[in-house]
Length: 122
Image 1 (tube, rainbow, N blue to C red):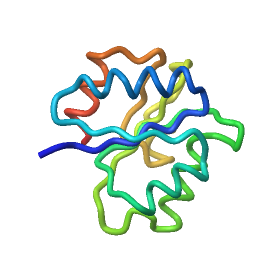
Image 2: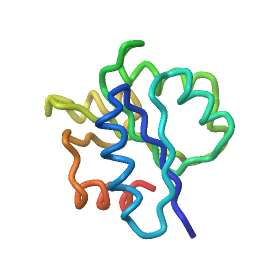
Image 3: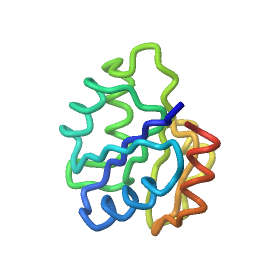
């Protein structure tokens, strides 16, 4: 059974890089979104096992997007997990728990780290 993930990142280069390495992982389908609106639209139309969200985008922090998704119940009863991505490793366990993220991925994300995250959380 395929795992479906959504990559949300305003940087086209980062988004395409992560999407391309995710496509190399067996039994993984991947969609991407470049901003909050596109991400919310995709989340309202599709079910995802895992969402990778950039920490900082022009519309605001990735935590704000994830909060709006949870507050607006866009996921229904699905057990979708979210991981925040960024260039800084200062996201504490408390930050992750407070904002509903299951983990943090340091950019640039490598194949093995992405594969492990999908295996653990999707």
